[in-house]
Figure 1 (spheres, rainbow, N blue to C red):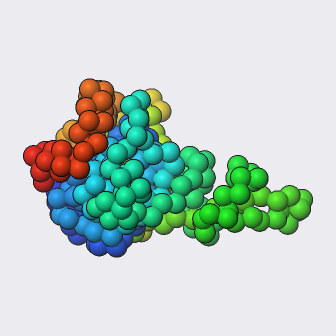
Figure 2: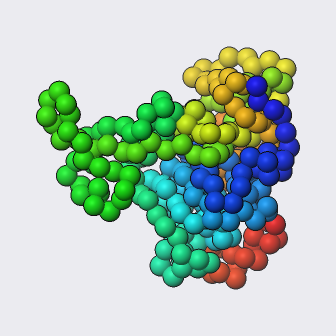
Length: 266
C-alpha cells in the first residue's frame, strides 16, 4: 500500500543523484511542486523523462539538476522556446545536456513497454525517418509474420515516476480526471512512484472519465495543494497563462532566472 508522506520526505527518500525520474502530466496536472522540491534538495545528474517538457523541465535544467532529458516536443506552450533548455544544449550552461528526443507516440510506447514488463514496443511511426542512426533507443525490426520492416523503441523504467492528481483517499488510492497523458503508464513503468495530490478525502466518488490508480501500485502519496500551478488541475484551478508568458522573459537571462528561482523556489 502507498505510504502517505510529506512532499519533502517523499522526494528525499525515493530519489537519489543519478536516477532516472519521470515527471508526467500532459498540459494538465503537471507535477510542479515535486519538481521544485527536487531543485530545493539539490539533486544532480538526473535523467528526466517527460512528454512535452515545459516550465518545470526548464527550471530543473537551469538549476543544474539534469544530465539528460528524454522527451517529445520541448517548449513553453503557446509562447516559444525554453531558454534554459536551449542554453544548456547550445552553450553547456549550467552544464552540458544530453538529449534523447522522440515523438509523443514513440515516448508513449516506451512507457507502455515498460509498464507491460516488455523490453521494447513496436511501431510504424519512425520508419523512414533515419532516427535509429541518432539514438540507441530506436532500432529497425522485421515482423516475423509478414516480413514488414518496423521500428522498435526501448522500454523505459524510471527509478522514480512522479505524477500529480486531484485526490487520494486515506488508503492511498489515487483519482485523476480531465486531460490525461501517460500518468498511469508512468506509474506502472516506474520502479517507485510518488503521487502528489490536491487533497486527501475519505472516499473517492466517481467522476466522468476518471482514472483510478490503486494503492498497491503506488509507493507514496503526498498532499500538495496547488501542486500543478501554473499548470491547472481540473475542478480546482485554471492555468495561469500570464505566468507562461512572463516565463519567456524570466528565463531568457541567466541572472534573472537565478534571481527568480532564489526568490520563488529555493
